[in-house]
Image (cartoon, rainbow, N blue to C red; front, side, top):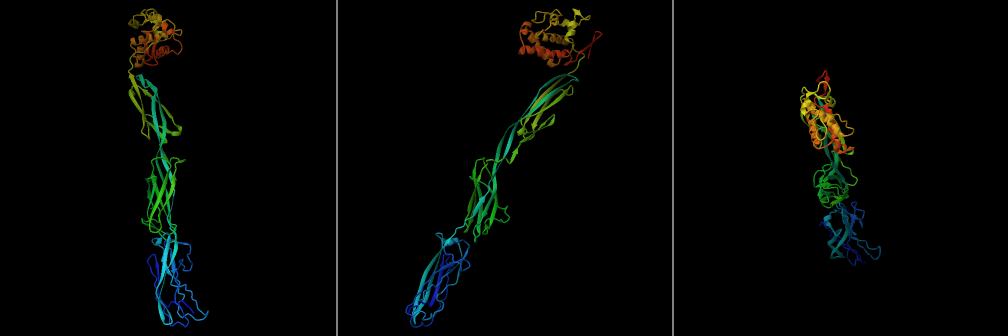
Length: 509
């Protein structure tokens, strides 16, 4: 008969942590007759935390509690079969379950190694004793590495700022008025959009950090974010569960942080969030594209502007979509209270841009004088037909004095119908204006300028030369325009006013 029997032993189970399992020896008394050999067998098993579910080819994670056990596993051959009973108790021997919390520090080559060894036991045949050592017996468990899952959003944004231009014009920049007279100037203020420039590119969003571990806390030491090298500002205090770094994120837990970053332009970039850790749960990264395609400005600065004027006050507003905007108003000046220069400024309130226009008002005191028309002067020379000639004619040499290059006398020119010749249109008004001035009628500066220009023309041009000009010829038009100014003066529309003729007396009307 042969039996393997363990009678005295110490069991040592060594894990990568360096822990050992010791069990005191068990003694046996005299074996029955027929024992012919001694020996033993040693093995090791690993279970889930319930102590009964084998892990086998499965995996374990950091922080998980597993249980090791070293069974005897001996095969006891007894002959004759069913014959001699085993004397030593505890055979086969199963060690107590040994708890172990998985730590990544004990992992080598992706596996968790465990070993058990039987030392210091004795076996015997009859009264003959023999020392017995078994093992080591090894087992490897697959380790599942766990890292943080990091996801993020990226919301690009930018602002736009619109630029503007402003101009201001006035149709009459100078008024030559007599005391009591008024003149009106019309102002045009034009505001034009010169485009909008995008700026203040930025990105913001949320970083979500999830701990997928089933057993271990993730010790987060920091959270950072960058956009192609541009460092973002990260704020985890927006998550109510956050305290400070290092932060313990429980198994299955989530930490959410906010971030913002200023960007140089609207290029499409990659935004990367990084969570770093210490301990067995590794850090992680998450990315999101930063794409401005189809994104509208968050704020458009000066998309609408307001225009103010030093005289009129608020002129109104102008928007980019409605530009250019024209603002019109008029201003009436009265002598003598408005004499002088009137500077006027229009301003874009939001940008401070300005445009100016100036009007000068020249006031001439009214004298005891007035003007008479060409019809009066033509009939009041010494040649009649009026009964009382006006002595002012003497100041030009009388009605027979030669009129410049016309080849005619003053009176002959007066009596020559224009018939389309602008020379005579101007000559008639010119002679009347000169006689009015010589008679003492005041002459506004604008009228004086017209007289001076006409004098120059008559000194160089003949009736035939002007008669040859047709239509809108510039020189012909100049003769007509000057005739209009001097005619207004002679008829009292501008200047001191027209005289009444009554009983041969002349008075201001």
